[in-house]
Length: 178
Image (cartoon, rainbow, N blue to C red; front, side, top):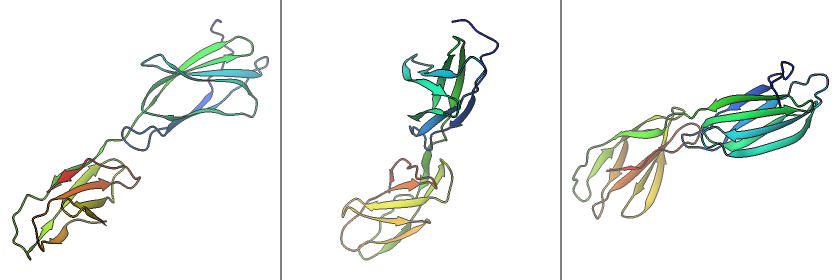
């Protein structure tokens, strides 16, 4: 299988993973056909591991091809047409930054029947607005807030709270606690 000038580059659409570490990315191929090459085969290979992930055969005029549920990384797409022409193309899928809790309120001692304000700040991912899920680690009850700070009342025992943030696309941050 030699390299042929008539083996055209297919149209390639890349959809990157939604979240950092996610595997909902995809590559979509729109074939370009030349006279005498009415059928294509596409092989998708992980460029780092050289593992063949998918081979699609009998792709004809009017059809698209795709590989779905892949993470960030480099992928080599090998096109072989019915005339024997072969062409490799490497594409890269990228991932957004992680959604992270960048700061939380300082630990604070409050008396029974007292109250305090706790807060967290998130960044990264697809950006805000962020929602914050707070969990009382003693009673195991949770509440979701679309803003921070949050007022908490201590009624009987000492409590600790954990918090994580969710960005606008549903990507979840690390947990932090107060």
